[in-house]
Image 1: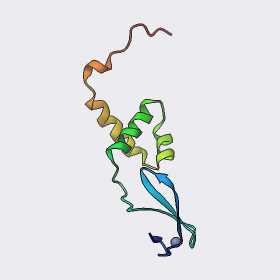
Image 2: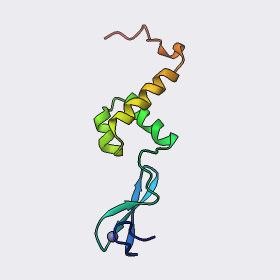
Image 3: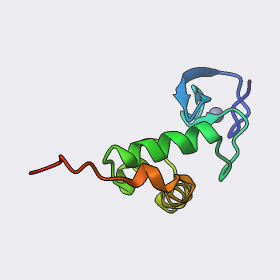
Image 4: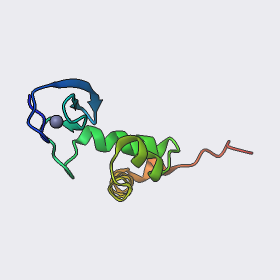
Length: 97
Ligand SMILES: [Zn+2]
């Protein structure tokens, strides 16, 4: 593994981000990811973003946590909502304030 910025081989593992190994270059002190694929996210990442939204996280918060543009997240949540069958939209009648 070499740094994608300066091609140095003095790189160290720097944790995982969005399921990909992240690296830190000790020569130029920049971070990079293995096989960067911008705008291409796995089904797992999409599902995670949708779950965060359903648990009350705002789209901007999700963007800050995952680094994914909030417009992408909004689209995924919209797609997920359309995929849910009608019977799951029932609101419990026992829910009184
Ligand atoms: Zn470097």
